[in-house]
Length: 134
Image 1 (cartoon, rainbow, N blue to C red):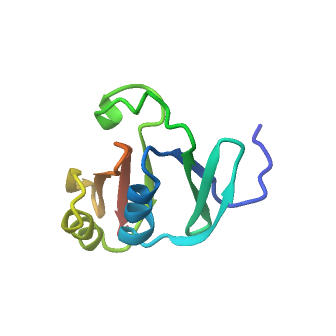
Image 2: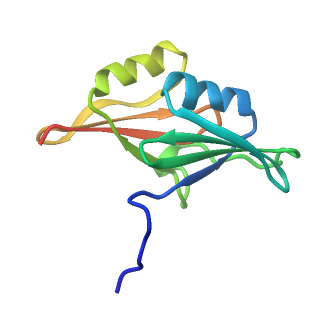
């Protein structure tokens, strides 16, 4: 049995410690389209578009004491990374590196004609980029 859905993608909420740093990464470096901001009960939500996915960058009024555990997929359980399919992995990876972000997994082939790379955002979240030339 599967659930009925009304959209072809899911949305993701990322609680951040520094909204400007997160927006510099997601909006300015990756090029996500800014769709608007809204006040929430606990802070501000900056809505960015990645295809049909809404990336909700949530900036709480009171920054949580605890941050993500470092180490990406091997660092802890829970949601440790998310994947964006891109047409040119090398260009995007270089853009992130040139902007000063840590490339945690250099571009590499994971199966014939499929390559990935991973980059760490300012809060330590890992974003996987996937290039599929199958």
